[in-house]
Image (cartoon, rainbow, N blue to C red):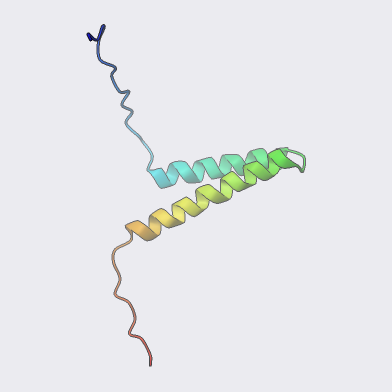
Length: 75
């Protein structure tokens, strides 16, 4: 079986903002959209997206933080 045409090329995009910055921007925009919407499902969805993006930023910060020694356990 012969493949015709050229190979598909992956689009490469150089990101100018870090993942955390992009997620925080997305969260801010979702909250702004939610403020303009009447109470309902769409507003709740936008607020959920904002909270999820902020949670991912916190998780990323936790995972990329330098390792800390754990405090000694009290017995």
